[in-house]
Amino acid sequence: MDASSRVLSELASREAALDAQIEAAREEAKREVEAAEQEAARILRDAESRAQAMQAEHDGQLNTETHAIRADATAQAEGDAHTARERASLRVQQAAEHILKAVLP
Image (cartoon, rainbow, N blue to C red):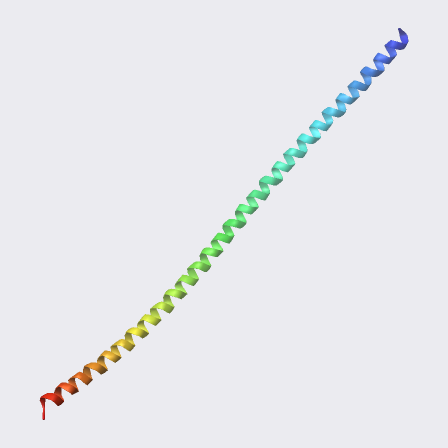
């Protein structure tokens, strides 16, 4: 019995050591999972921050381009209106001359 007691004691000791190793591995895995979750949260915050910055930059560029397009369109419209007024004025003058020639001998 002495030998079997020693074997049982040795097995119990090894089992306790394995249990301690398993528990240590669990704790290490838990710490690694927590660290990975924190890193993922940090990455997500950084990505959201960068996305907001990119959106703000895009909005600014869009606003600038919109103003430039409006300014170009306004200038073009004013130029077209000026040209149309000049043509209309010339035609009115030509019509008046034609009328005067027809009415006056």
